[in-house]
Length: 530
Image 1 (cartoon, helix red, strand yellow):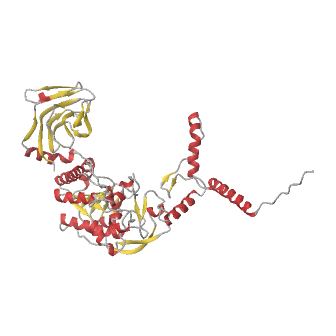
Image 2 (cartoon, helix red, strand yellow):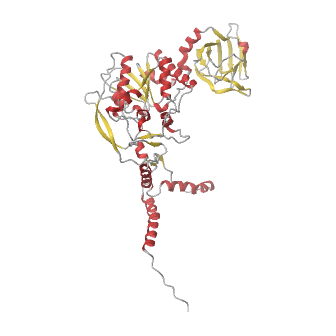
Image 3 (cartoon, rainbow, N blue to C red):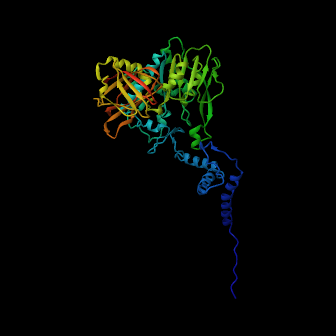
């Protein structure tokens, strides 16, 4: 007779474990089916994976499991509350749960990371460490190009101001974590401001010293965001307007607006690290006795372009801006007669086609500090007048209409005329005129003058070789210029220089079939590089 087996009842903890397991698996699944479908996660600031459609081909069938897994992971029940809890725990331990946020002292949060290889948002932590700097060549190039913009605008009767708005990391450096230390004495902003003031006439407004000295007036930046607040922007606008008063005496009256204390909830950086419940010090501007600017168009994109008109005020201004000008704009637009805003960098095309028609007085280019070391895009359109002056002042000629020293490919035909002009007929897709070796030096600058008549509107492309060039591919893409050619007479002055400049020039005279007459082709050395 076999012994009987007694079944034991489950112990309480076994029941609890099983119940917890069922809840942990089942509740998120139920929530998955119950929740609303959304395409974007506001908390994570990213688009969520779309629901995959039923596969209709073998290739789609092969990809379906992967795509469904991505979709389910994004819509897992209670996903956002769990992520929020995870962020709060890590943040409380002083470890940032967000790759783009560094936790500082006393509740201060900073954009960026010290992790090796980090480069997002122009690496503001690297700026704080003074490791993102200009090379000497980059610094000179940047200064020249800002000066070119200012010079060209001056010829149009328009002033130019470069406004640098500081990183929070600079104004509140003492709130950075202890392990963030400066590795060089000067930052890129130090380099650029000092060089522009010493070597150019560009009007630079550097707000760093004023804001640092004004911290005793109140909190100037948000602890949980990258930007300054209404008080910080109010101090900044007064410095800017004082600069404009010097440029336009009697036409503006700088003043500090009234601001009243307020509070605000956590902003972007705080939300990313699970501190969305934080309430912090803030300020609100008061404009009771000031004009109310009228926006044109009334509706439209947040990033413009758009214009504010303030009756009774003077000046017509265009502002190239980023997000830092947003808090400054309510003050600025109430002190300027007509202010137009573009979320962009100034370019020759924009200035020529848009700004000159709107900015009768001033162009402001605002850059947040973390954009540096920024170098404006080079465009010979800015340089025509100064290039002409440099050219005419020089007596050092390297090439002077010696067309026998030119070589042509099969996509064009060329012949010298009795009057000394060079007639060129372009028929192929890639016409080329090559100059024989020229004695260019890496420590010199040069201007090529091309005086010519064209039968068509087109473009001209100039390419230079490197010093140690490959005979099979002698011309470097970064050593190139592209200029507009109009039908009729053209007189171009093209400045070029580079530490690695080589002895060869390749000229693509037109990018479409047409006829050209070169009346004057000269190259002159204009000055030594600094």
